[in-house]
Image: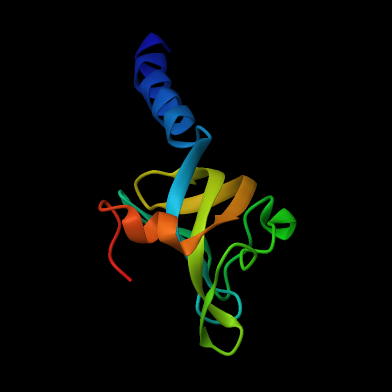
Length: 117
């Protein structure tokens, strides 16, 4: 029993750390219906992909086109945003969205840690 606890406790702590809420800012992409992701200095975070169950809080996301939006496919495209989320840090799949706000495009364009657009 003690041996099992020694193995389980680190896994529980790792899972808790992976799911801690954090605010991430970068390029918000919505190129087609049902596909949403955020690319920040650490990489791409999948908020939603077609056929995937939406994470908790996705339905409450604000309109990400408010502060600036580049349409690339009808009304679909990309912008700059900050999203407070919980995610698996290994797969970068978002499991919960707590808040989101669109930002002016100039903010992401000026951030040298983000890919250029």
